Image 1 (cartoon, rainbow, N blue to C red):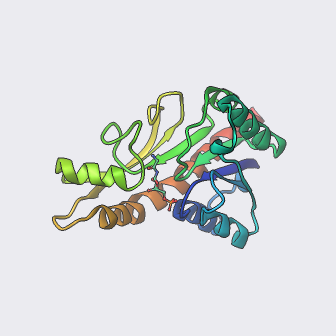
Image 2 (cartoon, protein in one colour):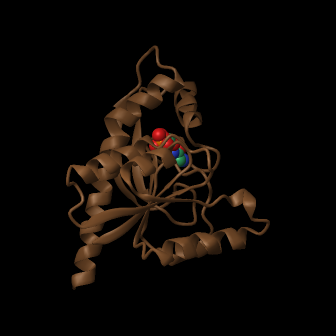
Length: 202
Ligand code: GAR
């Protein structure tokens, strides 16, 4: 079984999609054993509690030196034997030590079709506002591996979603979540768990 940590910052609807998928048996090769939040107020913490999953808060702001933050993140993950890290609406940037500790084992979901509307400064509603400002007729979501370039790692899955004439950032965000994110993320996690489990056996 691949031990999974889900890193969150906000409402945690993507975390919920993962929890629901797990309950429905979608992860025969993995188990979510830890939820790490970047702030105490994240509603995602409530979702973890309701699902009986251990949660911790590690806030970048509480460390004067970013190196200390990265060290504590790695220690927290490694002490639970985490093998796969899923960023599900996680808004802190992870430093090189974290990325190096989990090469090819950190996934992120981004609410656009990368390489559009991505990179530094593009998160949450800002991504959808940018898509509307540009006037694209199709947007979507992307699951990708995390490397040192923001939203720059290898793409695993993408799904397109229509932009409708009366969309606001909020309505577009909701449609992208419902039609793409909540489906793609569990699918990618199942895929990677199977792959990592195979690697362990071989
Ligand atoms: C999601 O739309 C996710 O794709 C996005 O934040 C939202 C979190 O919602 N992530 C990014 O923008 C990362 N660059 P959630 O907390 O309800 O899952």
